[in-house]
Image 1 (cartoon, helix red, strand yellow):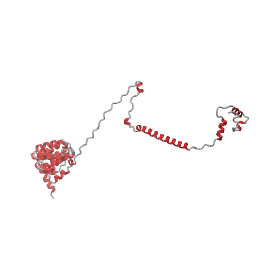
Image 2 (cartoon, rainbow, N blue to C red):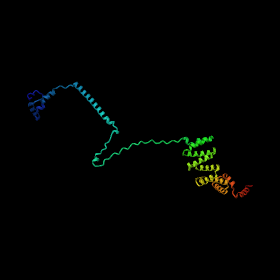
Image 3 (cartoon, helix red, strand yellow):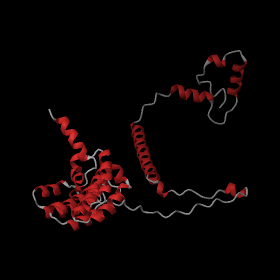
Image 4 (tube, rainbow, N blue to C red):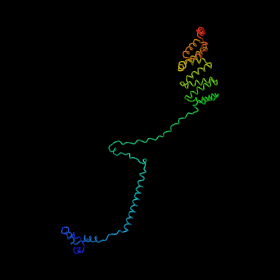
Length: 306
């Protein structure tokens, strides 16, 4: 296309008819043959083309494309969640850390061997301590039987409790001996029970009472020699420190019975010094009166006269 061919073409005059260099270049360009579309023709077509109307098919295509894209995105998201699910549900038990340490091996450091797994020891349940039988430590029921006159049943009750090693057993054994001696008249059985008490509870809370009861029982059984030996042994131990006056009173009575007034009077003197009540010493004093008792009777009678 030449300038002559494009003379009918409307072209902006301010670009072609100017005297500047740009207008001259445009004129020269329009004068040359152009193989293909020219700027002038393109400008004409652009200026004379009516405005384009929106096509309904294009909107339908756009909406379909967006729907397909949304569906594809939803399927991709679902596949990604399914692929991540095993990782999320993995537990710490299925994870095994690597033991190898390449850096330490390259430096020549000795490889750390894992400690062998220790066998899991099952802890045995704690042994249940046997609960004490309430009836085995309650001496009140035995005392009720004794007050009711059921001495045999009371002795059996005390004997059952006495099998233990508690304070209740110590008390029950002593009460069993008292019932056997006084209520049932079984002196030998009572003496055996008291001897058992001395062996099992030598330092018990009733040791002094048991010692005194045993000596008194020996005297009632007519075993004076054994009673004197028990008194001499008791005076040398804890029993003598606690019940020395009582032991001397019993000793004085036994010695006066045998006619040993010298020993009896010495025992009476020690008993008085220990504070024993005079009524307990009268029998021994009558058997072994003092030498000056007859001389003291008259002045005392004169002082009492009006």
